Length: 584
Image 1 (tube, rainbow, N blue to C red):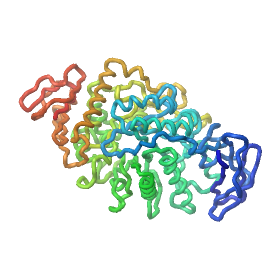
Image 2: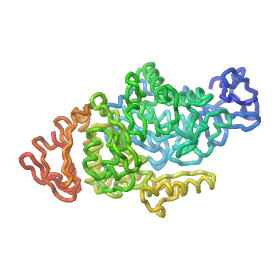
Image 3: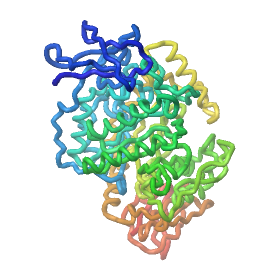
Image 4: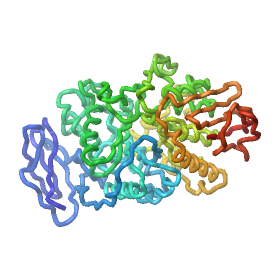
């Protein structure tokens, strides 16, 4: 390792020291609030060095920009040079989001081992179902051994339990070698409840109230420029030092920023500049509860200039159409025309009244100028499964034909499809909310808060698993042996057929809203989606139904029973219960 330089931003400190092994070295104050050593420090022997910062006699604290935390978030940081990795992806030119399939996974539960190395061994499987991007749930350092990742406190460090930063680089290399990009889920709207030492260094946190999940960042108050830089540099780190191809920005509606240039717009500008420099596409995807197309509107049209955003309305409409569940926020999506509107308009709530929020919600998408791929949709994801009382997947309520319907709507619909790990074979393992807070009082508070969150959904608090129980984490790991079982294997085969169909028929990836048409009969329980000359015909019902289908060749079909098409009539199909048919 080359001579290591140490620096930290602590604008209000009177004195800052570097703890480096047994040594304490004085740092010199700079004009901009930074403290630095006057000279570089040669390594002690060979290998990495453990270090921390002492601020006005308190500490040592871990480095806010630490790349490694082998002893946990309360321990000293360890140096790490990302340039030591010899990259093998020189031929990787990137991948645009348009036309792509995204696969969301949690490293700790994707495999029994729960490591990057083990996940890399499953990339062949992902390739077989047409995955173009792997989207990793947050991997930054958090307190404890296992967690969803949204309690991170050291954003620059990669969780050691997954293998640390070097293993992360190797995982990205493996994905690129198979032609798959990597999207990293990042959390900039709050910090976790344990191990957040940022206030010891400076005004990182907002004086305004935090959000549901923790303390909010100081994005627009005094001394906020270096805080914004802290976030922007972190985003650029993933995209440059780790060769990541995109970022999923968690809950951007919780970013408190009244600046003339919103943080998201500033991020889009800088990521665009980096993309031009390195010569490959870099994608920014926002998770937002606002249904506001301004996020994905270009900067030239006074938008933020992000590439895409999640549309939970799609999930809700599909979920209700298949399960009939109408509690809480599902209530507005009960009529089948809710699904029809989502497929043709992007959002269901686009200036309409939301009974769950008890107010008007959302804004219309300009369908003449917005490509459909800018919306990322899923029938299942970590939020919509993990935030249920028992973390149950659709497979707990639906038969295999209904799971196939969900797959077809997602993969052959007009938007960018995202799959959640294991859904491709109808995994029966739950994906529950799990934590490993070492502090007993924090663990108890988390469990209590979890139960209270479910009040509005009408779920029984007695069935909510304890997040702190190690069994909750173990239950959430995928059982890969299921994929070889008869019905699971049949569903997996259908996912592969759907992915191959996307590659072969341009109608499916056509990004124009005006090329979509939907017809349905709520009483009969059928729905037909037109994508150019391609038709997806669905029977949601529990009995056979005749569906007007026009002409065309049946190229894909799936049903709970052996045959989806029970009879072919002039301009109509007799469809089996819980079935889907694709015609061209």
